[in-house]
Image (cartoon, rainbow, N blue to C red):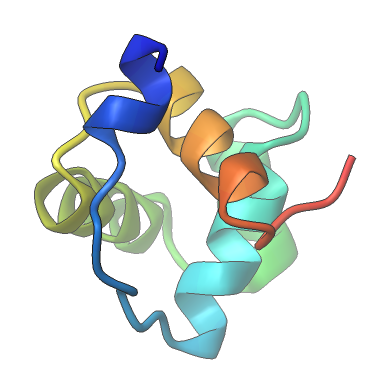
Length: 77
């Protein structure tokens, strides 16, 4: 088992639609400011989504978020 799969939570973590949308956009090459523009929210709101997901998912980086989103099937590449 690799370190990515062992770091994933064993329980399903419910996400709301905005968190899912943020994760999908975070898995692209868009900057956080561009993500905020696409979501029609402020960059601080995007920062809030990111930080909340870091805490809930026990992750530390955008790459970690992207790997988690792909691994759990929230984002399909």
